[in-house]
Amino acid sequence: MFMELSGIDRIYRDYDITATLKNGQPAALTGVQAALLPPRTRPTAATVWVATAYAAGVATVLLAGPYADPANALIVSLGGADLWLKVVDNPEVDAEYVERIYVY
Image (tube, rainbow, N blue to C red):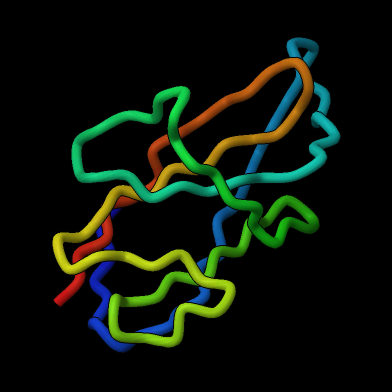
């Protein structure tokens, strides 16, 4: 996926999160976290993750351009970024690339 964001935008994005157990039953999740990474890179042990608003299978992330109010938002730099989400479920962690965000 691909998203465009202006430097002054603040936009909420909703992402459907589906997690199932090996037996096919839905998994009860404790939360979902988000991270912005440079394009075409993957998370590492040093990646900084932030909590999203998560309810009823939907993670909500507030994205903001570099000139927008940064309060409670993930700030996307002018070069753009890749958004990753990870399911918080002890002991497993499942991080997935979601979309590239281009800032104009």
